View 1: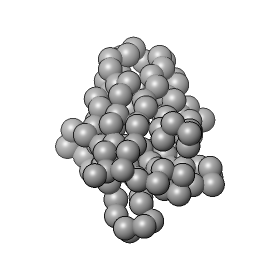
View 2: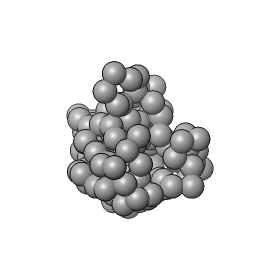
View 3: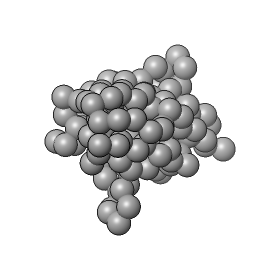
View 4: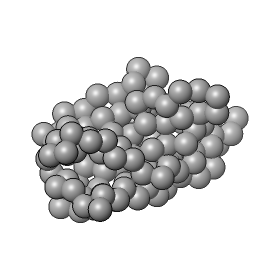
Length: 117
């Protein structure tokens, strides 16, 4: 059974930082591409950052230079460090696993990030 458990969301003032963490189980983490998505009220879910099994990363233009995605294969975790947060970063953030052995996407339950102006 695949589980992705996010933590680290919360309320922060504009300009502040938050660190989201996602712990994965039930998959071979080291071969899995991991990603963070977000969904703001009334908007579609969008890709924020992605990291491949080899450590290559890519970011949405709106977060480049402010967010950093990283992974720890020994701990089966992926982290999204968010700095210089803006009110428009307010959303529910979801951890995503793109598991190659089943060609399936798995999702966490989401964690709320609220940035006040």
